[in-house]
Length: 393
Image (cartoon, rainbow, N blue to C red; front, side, top):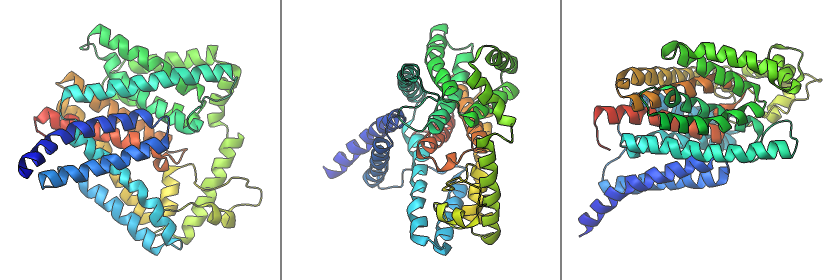
């Protein structure tokens, strides 16, 4: 009787986990607290499922050793940090990696994969419509409602890139392509209205990648849209775009100060860094007298990782990023005969490219909401590969 009940439970858990993940991705744009609770539910379901099946449910992937190396260096640097307790607390970000494997084992069919994309993007489109209405009614300079405008910009950028392949795929039915386009438009408009330059650059990078490896004409469309933007956009947005290359712009100048100060800190902690901690107190000791930046983080993934995890940790995370990109690219080539799975893997690759470029100007690797989507997209690509190969969860 116990064995039968365990079998029933084990059969039900993948479906429950699927919906918990979809709900988590749908609400993370609204509430980080709700997202965190659902992350806890995800971890609990994984444990219960493993106990019910009496095996560890996560399959092996090509990323496993790279994740283990990253987890290992987080703990090693925490041990040697001058703020060891705080570094261990900050290492809770490692729990988000569970999302990769949870998606892999619960998104077990093409129908589930597409359903998740439709639900999550539709919810995001509705939220974007509300944010756009608030933006214009409140006469805001930058779009935001539920999160900081930089996080909002990063989320809109990633979801926009995930939607472009199914919009462009001529093998999709026209009604489906139209629906994807309709949910893409408010998300894309919201992205523009955040005035988040790093998210704009991430989106452009993702489009360039898509144009290089699949849709050649997309680059011409990108150029047209950029010209159109500079012709019709409001002056403050045009000025915002032009400021990207202005080294005297206050935001750019502040970032340059942070990066310079970050290198100074790293010079004193070269191998294992400071540990994964808030850098504010250290930053105050190293910054120039005229530098008014807070310095809790350094608005650049790569410099921040160099400072907090040292050269050893920086190298490990760069190897992880490189492996993720290579894995998603290989999956795209493997599944390209199946147009739905090709769209998912291609969108995930564009999303990750956008994340990497966005991270040149933001600490988005340390942003909970952003990383939920990054790990989710990697899980989607791996799930696409697994479904294509016909493996059961």
